Image (spheres, rainbow, N blue to C red):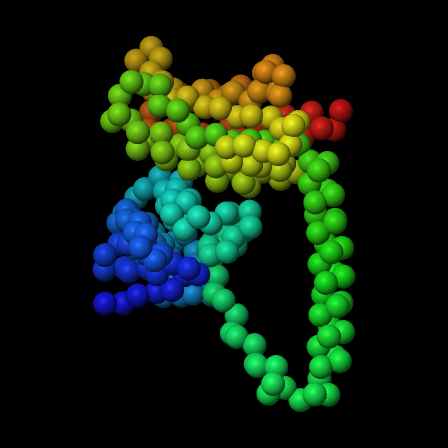
Length: 254
């Protein structure tokens, strides 16, 4: 049986399963096939078209299908799109399964004359890393903060839960891609963070997704709504999130 190592995880394609010690996580078939493709081309960029051809065999699907599957894989692997350890997004091109670099040569086998150079380079790397961390985190503190929570199923019908899950995944993925906004999932250490809550419900006989962004004091900063059923709602989330991102940036610019 073929097995792939992904960090602490072991992926068994034949069983559609991730394993970590005694822990077992089953993957949905399309997610397993996508991860299998990424593993077979570890370290290489895989385009959405490659995934469509391998997983969906060229069948027509909605534009958000691949991002939703990638989001499901990240959730299963406990990965973060903003600081990925396993699956990296190559902007506007595709995805890459990140591979660990080869182990360093043991220190005992290195010539002694290289040690001062190695030490100097290590110190330089630490200085650069500290400077970058200061620049990144200092800048992040000036960005508007957004806490994104999963979509709630307010339809009273569990049959709509797959749509709720897909909408949640799409919402999280689009939030991670907002430029000029620091995003968090579920909670945030920042007291000035805006909280985005969403509900799927039925209004006048039609499926409707309502999104509401609230300031820390409970007042409403922004609302978005999309109605149109299972095909339109996930696709419309991208447009709605761009609108929210613009509103957050205007708020900070004032």
